Length: 167
Ligand SMILES: [Fe+2]
Ligand SMILES: [Fe+2]
Image 1 (cartoon, rainbow, N blue to C red):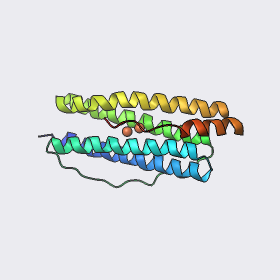
Image 2 (cartoon, helix red, strand yellow):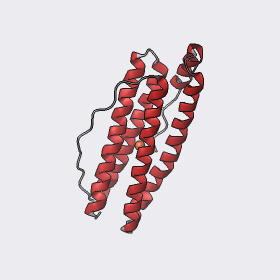
Image 3 (cartoon, helix red, strand yellow):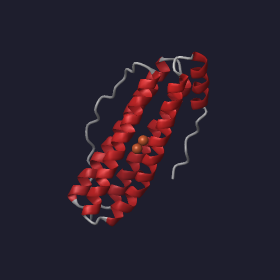
Image 4 (tube, rainbow, N blue to C red):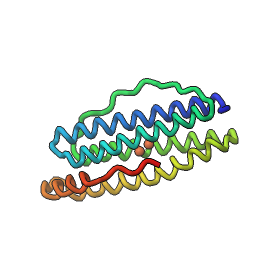
């Protein structure tokens, strides 16, 4: 049986992951409106991954006989000043999520909840990957700047991303 503190923290993390999915969906819609379907498809994959993260935690909580409590999802930002601004918002969100995972890890550590620590290991690794990919993507769109041929090339490149196999 999982402690009430960890249970509440995992429920909060489920909310963060679903909120991230919702924000990525909003970013994807923004790129569709900007007629950049490659970027839109890329962010749709991000959205799907965040939902998978939420489900990992959801299933884990149920496996530990915890209670799932779904909380309200805040309205995401839907307007971005530029392509760069959209990627900056995404990177900031990933960093906030890393901080949240770290906090959850710290909490599980202080309770000697070894099973939760083990489960969170995957999330720590995933956040390293997420921040790396988002940081590199931001750097690329910054380099392209307002050069439309470079942006169209990036739109193609981002559009060729394939979803990862679910672990
Ligand atoms: Fe996530
Ligand atoms: Fe993420």
